[in-house]
Every structure is written in C-alpha cells, then in structure tokens.
Image (cartoon, rainbow, N blue to C red; front, side, top):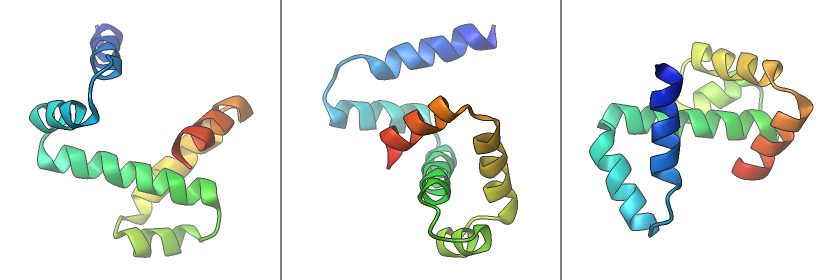
Length: 92
C-alpha cells in the first residue's frame, strides 16, 4: 500500500508544470515543518557529498542534529556507486 501511495506522489510531482505551480502544490500538501525537514535533508546530503566539512561542522553550519547527519550518512553508505553518482549529479 505504501509503495502505491509513494508512486502516486512521484507521478504527481513529475507532471510537467510551471515551477511556481509545483511550489504551490507542495506548499499545500506539506506542513511548514515537513518542508523545512525536506530542505534540511537536501542540504545535509549536499554537504556530505561535497565532502568539504566534517559531520560536526555540517551539523553546526546547518543547525541540524548529529543524528540527522548520521542518518543521511548511513543512507549514503547503503547506496550503490551508481546511486551515489546519480544523487550527486541531481543535487550538486
């Protein structure tokens, strides 16, 4: 069931539309905290992939917990090299 719901989300956000419409759609669907969490997670992944800062430096500069950094780091460790390369290409 969860996979079907997630697929529905992916289909919805990948429909061609103006970026302001996508911003409005996500603004309507997600709470302020959810939007902040997603933005924070993206920033953490960018910083980890960039590799210029230690995890403690990333946590301090982004104002997130070490646990958040650790979860993202562990997620990166489970990715294949192809997945990491794709993520880097998409977000860096």
